[in-house]
Amino acid sequence: MGSAMRAAKPKKPPAPAVSIEHLRARIDQLNRELVRLVSERAEVARAIGRLKPPDPGAVYQPARERQVLDQVAALNPGPLGAEQLRRIFIEIISACRALEHPIRVAFLGPAHTYSHEATREHFGSSVEFDPQPTIAAVFNALETDRADFSVVPVENSTDGSVTLTLDLLIDTPLVIIGEILIPIRHALMSRDGEREAIRKIVAHQQSLGQCRAYLAANFPHCEIEAMVSNAAAAQRAATEPALAAIASCAAGEAYGLKLIAENIQDQSHNTTRFLVMGKNPAAPSGTDKTTVLFAVRDKVGALHEVLSLFARARINITKIESRPLRSRPWEYLFFIDLGGHRADPRVRRALTALARVTLFSKVLGSYPEARLSGA
Image (cartoon, rainbow, N blue to C red; front, side, top):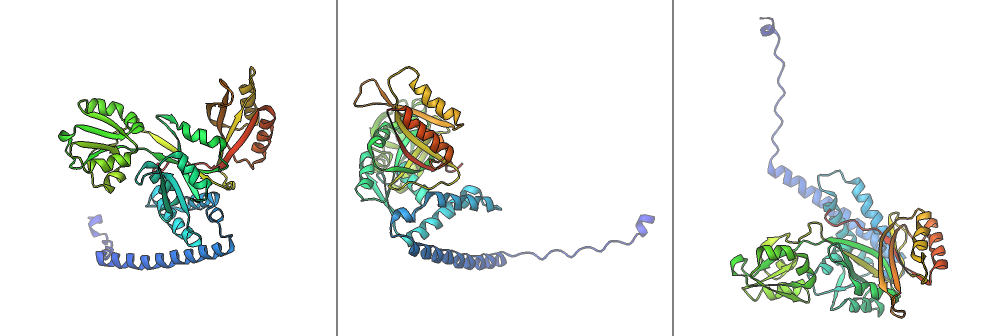
């Protein structure tokens, strides 16, 4: 009875219901503020551009752009994910950069290839895309000033190194100023999306190899044909109903294909690494990688001497690759990736020592270390 006689606590009035109209009005208000802030940012970028030399190398600064993206990620309170926010700011940076100076980027074409995707991922959409028919043509476009920068594939986590790119790096005057990691997610698509109608499957030879087990298990009756690129395969599939193409979903969408299966690559973590090439070295970003080329003397322990040099300096070597030395049969050039920037005192001292113990050495570039797109 005592509890019954206690005074009842006053109930809180119910919170007023928030209507969709009210929330949409708030979004409209925020949109106006976003437009104002983005426009203000663009004006500041244009003012910076007027203080720089009228040169693409001055406009595109890989280290500075990495720092901006890292700052944005550190400030992110959610609910947008880090990668979503990063993509938004890459496009803002790309549009503002174009106000300073429009830039042209060469890549291994045609459009809608993974090289095209890597170029857009790194530079954003506000650049002039310049597809080239071969990797050699990509290098040449930059070397002859027909492009301001270039993007070339250098290795795949399943298939290994792109040897033509490595060979072209030996003699080029260009430098590596960035890298891009793109997860390779292959899809099988056709004009009508009818699995039972497929009699032939086409794709680039490398992509066919990356999907070998899937094709053997699911389409053992189909003829397999290699093509010059996955984009070309998608374009062909758009005209032949009994033919399916392996390509990215973006390429399939561009040519109006329908999905049969996605993520058909045999290795779920299949990734391709691309290099960004320029004419001027990149400044330190704080999280950098350096790629070096060298040849050792023909003596026992020569390579061990080089590797020990970096070990003693406590510099991590993340990759080593050999290529035949063309002028001297059965002797080899070595490519290594190591942690740090060539301007770092410890790295600089190690590179000076490297020059003393090798036949020759060449720093191919120091650049911000990439993070996996979409990860």
